[in-house]
Length: 225
Image (cartoon, helix red, strand yellow):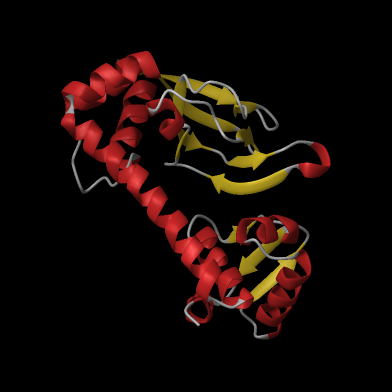
């Protein structure tokens, strides 16, 4: 095994799911290596398309992916995914079709797990299965938390909550106001007003498709309102 492969597998062991919940053994990592293959997607390329049968899932190692539905003027970004995210697995497990498109917004390196290869490995490697389960439940919890926020929080609190989540990955949040509105289910004008209030309070700085969080503690406090 080359040094690059070893580094790749070490990343996988510590980044997939919740690393401290169920440590992966060397046998587990070897199984993932057998079932997965590295793929590279240039910006604008797709990991999968809406309506296609889900024959594989993807674990993002580097880069960023936009999850969107529709085309042209009806195109709407509904989520973003970065390193450590798993995409397409729920549809893959139920042998269904993808309900959205996954497009690389930055150069992406990912591990592709073919359904016919990963399912047999999960059946005999409980460590992998547990980590995968934790990953899926974490994503469901994030979705549930966002839905609850949409029901009970003001728009400025919703925007602050989203910015807290996004800024945990990187200091600059590269989201347009229309994308934030789509993610939260509110109008672009409402997002613009909320960002203006956050900017006036010295919590964020804004630019073209870029928001920089400069007072994360204050932002978290606003997100709880």
